[in-house]
Length: 365
Image (tube, helix red, strand yellow):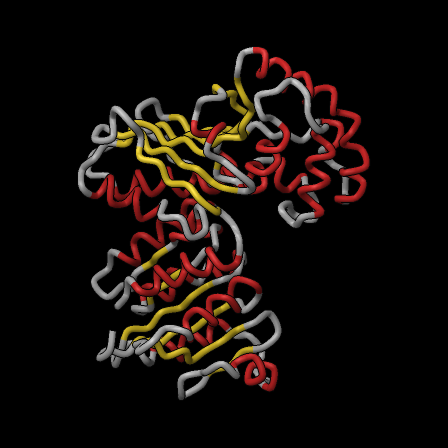
């Protein structure tokens, strides 16, 4: 990793961004030169590589975030070296800049799902930009499964000519924790509302749990997988062209009476009203020797992309292998016909997400 030099700009220096910078600066004999940092309130562009004092340097900067100016600064460096921009935000405005950066020859690396699961026109612009003669590269491993090798595995499968029969998995760490605790194969156990309340207290859910229970996070990840299959497969599939993640058939777990509850506190306070309904689902599943899991499915053969509550035998890997907030993804393909290829592990957390982002950055070396 010695000779070449790769300039790196980081947008978003929160939990994941700070961890990423720590991992990046800890690399020995690194070719990377960290030259720019942008937070929500200020930005810093340096002619020399930033070091472990970056927080104080950024805090001392009086420059306000300006992505257009940053684009100009980075574009000027492309002729002399590789340039990478890492977007650690969840901002749609930042995601809309990807085509501009890529066309300029700047590579984009990100855990931000917005560009790959939102408006298809933006996604199409990104693909067109990376396919242009001077286009930069784009890597988004951490958009699905944090540091788990999900996107790269899928690209390897379809890029080598394997045919995806079905992908199914527990893609949400929050939903994984909730149903690992709630549905264990027994007919009794903690109330659904109590599990959700505890998950919120542990920081597994969003401040408003409805933002997890609506299934949108899973729908975004399924959209990313479906688009990856359609974009990189060597043969056509029957997958629908998803205008956005909103086109995924998603079965929300939010009781209809609670759909417009404005605050997380009020939502948690009222959720016990619906415990009997969830208990009935658990009881019926356990009577059949099954557990409940919130699962996402991408089926290129039958043209199906869906997310919702499913039942699995207590002997199934979704019942036996999961713990805590793990993700588990099963790739059913022609080559892996008898036994699916399984990717499993922590699907959330700053350390593993930053690792996924850094792993993508290393692909530029």
